[in-house]
Length: 147
Image (cartoon, rainbow, N blue to C red; front, top):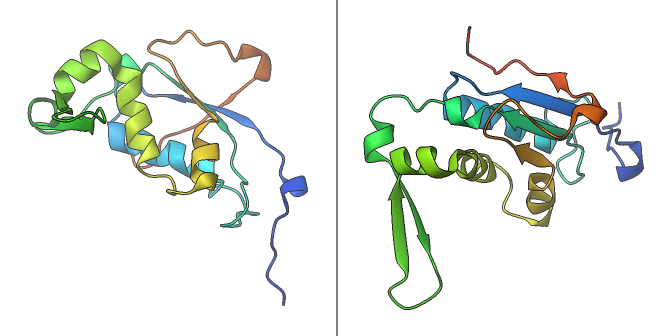
């Protein structure tokens, strides 16, 4: 029996929508990362971009469990001397909740050119309004969470 290796021409991309309202950030991020990398498909091949498009809505209503909202910080460097910056997640979620979702998902993707390309297929919106109605995205259930 031979191992099947997908070719870029074999990949058919679909659109999915994830409603993040009331769900933990990490659970949403793992579900989205799996779809972007194509791990939810039978034809998954590690070195071929087999992933799909994902639209995440209601990022303002996403939750952080435990005391992460008060204690967890996003740290980055501006590139200038003394340019180390930090922001607590309660302020980040108030001001720019899509950035928190993007950071969580990007951390779960491969750190290669393939991972950077996969990341471009994700769209995050603060509320239920989005611009991808024409693509008819299919709803996705987040793993490990019962509503």
